[in-house]
Image (cartoon, rainbow, N blue to C red; front, side, top):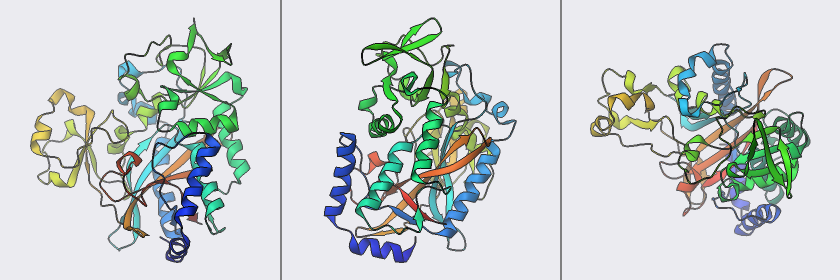
Length: 398
């Protein structure tokens, strides 16, 4: 999206540099990446960056409103309600498709939102490695609020640890090293000292939680939560002494309830030029005749599972009326192929990552994640066998 930078990058790109980038990441983490890293970052010009900031700010203002928790109470399934919820979501991720508006200029359209931490450690590390192995202009930044690298890591570390020592904070997941995001867990431990622990390994004694750290039973005082309820409910085989819904004496770095509050559920409540029309299925009196222009999404799913891109009346008829409140009908957006690569133009989705600053009592936009794709599905797992697509990072012109 910055033509001169894109041209220079493509002309100086080599497969050897790309291999060195991947080797560096895998050697540092001592872990083989299970997902595809795109051969290029994305270079975002000031005009699109300004629109992204505006779009994100509109959504953040809505989430930050004093009535937000009240209007999203129905978002949390009863079986997933976790006690001791805090007043603000510590983390917010907003996914925008890069499209073109009526004037022919690039413009963002909201696709998804999450009150959940993303790859905060890995994305920063990836950006530093792109700079190491490729010539990235110093005028472009992957950190989006003027932070230095050290300031960013200090901010993230403080958000994860709170006031506790690392041994009393865990990153909670389901079989962490089997997750596609395991590299982020490994890098988080390297800089913050927080170990990734499977939920089945947590020990509960009344209202206290413990885990084994180098064989020593250690109290857990704070949880950096990475467990997705949707995945957890599909694992009845896990023998757990602790349930997320238990009332226990811990702090949450990312309370699980916010995963539901800030989610697909929130999208029909928002109105903006940057948000495609979106409706709860049970609240639509007449199903649109142009269903080909809509996608059908289950509320409680993750990473694109269950989404129907080619909706038919029969698909809707198959959903019982009493279940329709758990589905959204969202107008399709047209991803504009906007990144010129040796394999042709590719589509782009940009995730803006926010952390709640408890001292300033405000959300700060600090980092980004970008995904590139040729096809309908953007996620890295849908682009394994292609090149110049996959997960990457953006460098932004201020």
